Amino acid sequence: MKGDAGAIQALARKPRPDIRLYLIFGTDDGGNAALMADIIASFPKGTERTDIDGNQLAKDPSLLAAEAASLSLFGDARYIRVHTSGEESLPAVEALLAAEKAVNPVVMLATGITEKSRIAKAVLAAPNAMAVQTKIPGPDDMARIVTDLGRAAGLAIDAGLAHVIAGFTAADRRLAAQEIEKLSLYLDASPDEPKPVTREAIAALRADAEDDAMQPIINAALSGDLKRLPEELKRMREQAVSEVGLVIVMQRQVMQLAGHAQRMGQPRDVAAWVRQEMQSRRLWGGGSANDWTRQLRAWGRPQAVARLSERLLVLQQAMMKASPGPALLLEQELLEIARVAARAS
Image: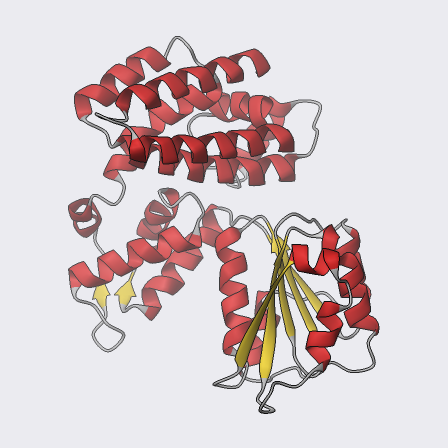
């Protein structure tokens, strides 16, 4: 069956012993992690955990159903947590759904599937399983998430400031939670003693200042703007922008770019799609409409954005070890990324 965040949150009030498998998938990594945590929190306190990965299930498709049906050594309650890329676990999922009994619930996070994947279709069609798909939040959704996180931390955040905070978290719930935690500590807020968030508090923490300095550099590289990038690199040196920090922010933007590319599909006119999305406020941050258009043309294919993500991860690791400093390594890599983007866009 199909579920949503509301159905998962309802588990805390009314558990579902009839559900033997929860499948979580989609483009919102932070949302996926939050849903998994909510499901696990709904299980009885002290429930033991067994971890299985996709490689194990690919080698032994009967393992999942066997673990779900078996009692622990002392008869204690337990659940099974599975991390998998997706389709390699299909035979194991089919065996679990068809099994005569399953006393231990399974929570599966599948990072590489869509609603059209066979494993998703199998779970959606099953009465004893629930599939929940996440999508990268839009600006308004992200602002609501920021507001909710703030309320739980004792912060009163008006709509305008919620959008400000949402804008520099690149639609990542985990980053939003970190910013809320910093603001809560800075303002000495708590649910019992709520405090209002002000622009001055945000500025004092420089929550968005460094991201603002980094964004033009990132946009120039990802857009393949070889004329603009040298000037941005010069400014980076003058302003002493954190090199490793820039790569981390760039990784966040690439994650966001991947989600938008998946949603876009293969339109005839990328520029028209971008204009429509920006007018509808489903596309924000990441620069101008021209920047988004060039970036989606350059990195819109799954293989291209996957290679870019891997490249940035390797770069970050290399920069951590670079001596005497990572600046030269970063500049060389940004220029190469821009050249690739320029050829593709």
